[in-house]
Each structure stands twice: as C-alpha cells, then as structure tokens.
Length: 152
Image (tube, rainbow, N blue to C red; front, side, top):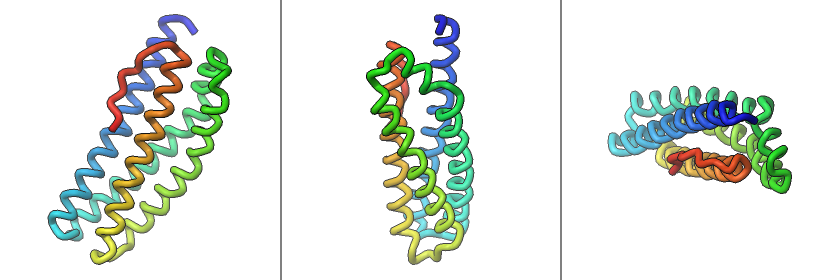
C-alpha cells in the first residue's frame, strides 16, 4: 500500500467510524431524553427510527470490512494479528443480530417496557463502540498509523 493509498484508507476509516460514533451518541442521548420525558411516544418513535437507520449503517459497515479487502490488507502487513481479526469478524453477526432484535422491540414495545429496553440499547452501543475500538487498535498496529478515533 502506497502512502497515498494509506492516507485515503485512514480517511475512509475515520469517516466511517465517526459516522457510527455520531449515530450511537445521538441514540444514547435520545434514550436519555426519552427517559427524562417518561418515554413519550414521539421520543420512542425517534429512537426506533434511529435504530433502524443505525442497523442499516452497521450492516453496510460490517459488509465493507469483510469484503473490501481492509482486513486482508491489514493481515498481509501483520499476519500475527489473524486471530484477533477472526475474533472481531465473528462478532459482526452477533452484533447485527442483537441490533436487529433491539430495533424490532423498539418498534412495538409499550411505554412500561421502555426503561429496560433503553438500558439494553445503551449497553449495546457500549459493546459496539468497544468492538470498533478493538478494530481500530488492530488496524493502527497493522498499518503503523494513528487513526485518531474518538470512540467512547
């Protein structure tokens, strides 16, 4: 990979991760607002719509990671990270399945069930961000580059 290709790759990684983090933060804030408003219908509808959008973005993000050669390129430079990469890739299916389940519940659950669902959504966001942070650390090590990602 040339320096120019690496720079483009880094920019793409930053943009994708920034978009996911921004969506996750907005959903987490929406859950907090909804809780403060005692789970008003309009607030919960917004969360459900945001989860559906996030699901679409996460699916595309995972598909790109698995098919666009990103991991292959990283492993060509750092074959000792193959185990870590496989572990992270195996997490994609479970993460997407649990987000699909949360999205479905958000579209039909009543107000009484929202406090528990809100906590589950915030927990899932934390798991996704930890997963993305682990991927970023692996890619940074493989490419010997600092992607400067703000994931929390």
